[in-house]
Length: 250
Image (cartoon, rainbow, N blue to C red; front, side, top):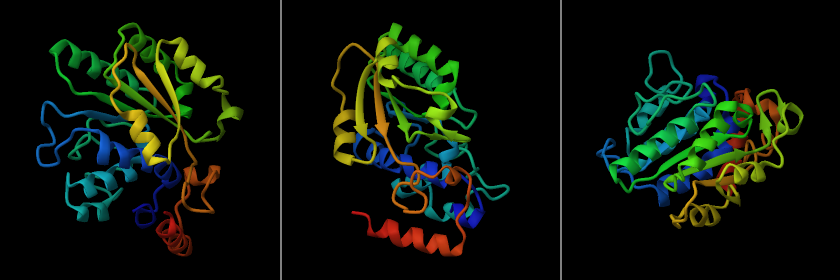
């Protein structure tokens, strides 16, 4: 999809692909046939630049025909380069970073006020956590003890213009979330079993934060942990190599 459209952000897509697979395959209660079912779990992908991964998972889950993927990031297509709520299964248009956790927290509070059992999930990028709006939402969620809110941080340690530690250091990252009143679990963001276990609803009295240690460009040797694949689009030769390498991953 990214190659065909000469688009960007394929590295960011690969770092959250396992999270999306586990959420849609094992954790969230959703119905592709009735995408707006009131009792569905909600997912906000705040790092909306990883749209290609989100659309691919939604298509494979049956929210819309897979043929739509051929028009990813083409002028006039519903499948825009950043996640759009015009697409079946997408809750919120995102890509302007820093807003997703606030919306996710609002949804979680709304569910509680309605006495609803569904959960609110939010996927954040690590660079996005430079923004003050993230920490306002974190404080709000901790104060209201939003136990039905789960945030997953894609901690691949690279953001748009450099390594996270060089741009704006986040460590001690887990301690920051804990101090805001969250239950924090650090997990390998590519381990499906560990993700599924960490995402299980265990109750408690705090919102839940999964600090997912990931690799940008995961699964493709020349993309892994490389800043330039935040923006680059693979050429024909790189596409063939990437597909071959991904096909060999167990």
